[in-house]
Image (cartoon, rainbow, N blue to C red; front, side):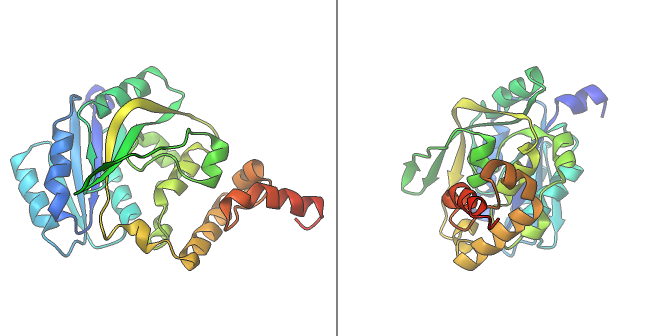
Length: 264
């Protein structure tokens, strides 16, 4: 592939674990994109359903699609595997049950091409299930708010070079959840602009077996916060005057009080 082709190519990386029921719909939403050229890399992460067979059928049907099959290693490992293998200079992670609008990639690429200071482009989003769509009010991005919670869904576009500089997705977070939040912290804590497109470009499917529900216990939350503090202590100190706390919104006032008392 020539350098100019690689520069314009967008690689959509789709980790898939037991999402065969939705995978074709997800891939078709990408194939309907107004932007070209692109490639679709499905990473089958040790699925126990028919995901691998469906992915293989899609690859035979559509030349833009190819499949990587690996033992189950979690979504971070699957994303890293796909991005490592990607030929494109711009990456869009997309889970195997979510959807994008046809104009999303084209609009995001225009921003990344025109504004080198921008590291991440995403859009407005909605959540949906079989009952219909539900509004999703994403908070505006700021580095301070990112220290407290994530406002950028996993399916934002970024440059492959910035993924590498950030240190890739943290595969150690396999059982902690919120890997995308930690990745955006790594990507953005020391600079870089973020643009949210003014339209709905991402559709997040709500399912009974979502990982977020499985990683919402107090014990897992404490493990996740300890991991974040161990990796990003200087960032939290700058934005929160100390470490991230279990009750995240209390972090800065609590840290400030402890410092005033000489206990931090």
